[in-house]
Amino acid sequence: MASEELNLPIIDLSPYLHPQNDTDKAKVVSQVRDACAKYGFFQVSGHGIPLHLQNGLLQAIGKFFHQDKEAKMKLSFLENRGRRGYEASGMSVRDGDKLPDSKESFYIGREEPEFEAPGFHCPNQWPETLPREEFRDPVWEYYQETDKLGRTIWEILLLGLGRDPTAVMEQFTKRPIVQMKMIRYPPGSATLPEQFGVGAHTDFGGVTVLLQQANRSGLQVYLDSLQTWISVPALEDIYVINCGDMIAQWSGGIYRSARHRVINASVDEERLSCATFWHGDADATNPLDEGGVRDTVGKLLMQRFKGQFSIPREVVEAAGRLGKVGA
Ligand SMILES: O=C(O)CCC(=O)C(=O)O
Ligand SMILES: [Fe+2]
Image: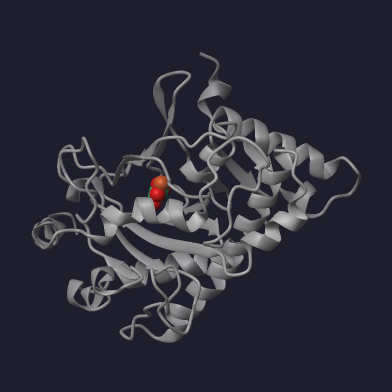
């Protein structure tokens, strides 16, 4: 087995963002297309997000999660109609897994003044227990950068399918649904045997832009071709990008949505990460003229959110108890 097959490609985005000649953009487009067709995942350098904003975000995430559980539970996402806020450890269970995920998360999205049914647009919940400059400001500054990077990737994916992104992007960027999930994985020593950080899943929407805390690896991607899990290294200033189910369906399977999972590789250190899910406007639909699923972003997301929106009370209570084990 050739070793390059076990490493996701690292693609330099700078020739796309700052082209020096006529072929620079096309070169990046074809690299991304190949990676999405083969793996559904790739890594990027030259993405334009300043390192100090990445570090500022990770610091803010650490501060939030290191508060006591009571402070965090004040912002429980279960009490929020738009599912923004805090998700305790033990809240997500996947079919086939023996135990719920050990991770804890905090969700934000586009800031809107009021809740709008069915919940894609609403105000964020911000902690009052941390000074604004220690959490809200760095998180929001970072959110805007990651939103921009998600758009760029979306454009590159469209170009890879032979579409001119200008007209398409207009339908996707009026009020795009861009969810950001900040995550903490407890160390291996605080995780139960057979408990995953995040169990095997595919992302369900558009593009995922993932920042990993440097040197805290744990992400694994399943390669169908080799029927094996490969570890993705956690490299400073390198993002991991992947396509969700919506993109796979719309592209008629040209772009893959690959299964992945997280097992914190460290026994005694926690792992922080931040995933931004860039979906586009709720009423936007498949930008390709033929083939693939034609449902809107909103409809496809609702189908997947339904389970999450109706978690039974006893599951919540049980998860709250389990959360204390993993926290
Ligand atoms: O934290 C990670 O490395 C990946 C998280 C992930 O796959 C997810 O939240 O969907
Ligand atoms: Fe994921």
